[in-house]
Length: 112
Image (cartoon, rainbow, N blue to C red):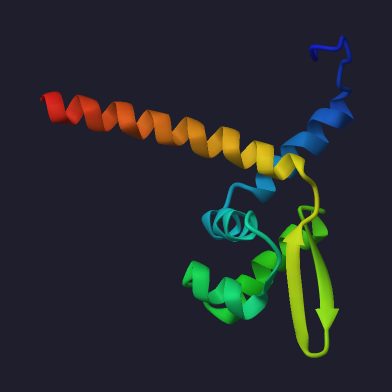
């Protein structure tokens, strides 16, 4: 049950699971992370992620279809940005959690 007393239906849980599937791919996570500091052209995202143009475009399409990003066309360029501010919170929570676990593991290795 949510903190405010609401309960998700089975359909709601399915929708949440589908949303998490969108983030279960490293390139899509890289793209979201790259967009956390603002709107970018596809070419900028290709450069930042080290991906190939076709691969980056494919994953941006998945993120767009899932409502994670929005696209704005200007001339021949497409600009992408995060569509929902909760994506920032989710990334901060998950990346922070992983970072803390890595720090613990590194600390344990250093003591070994």
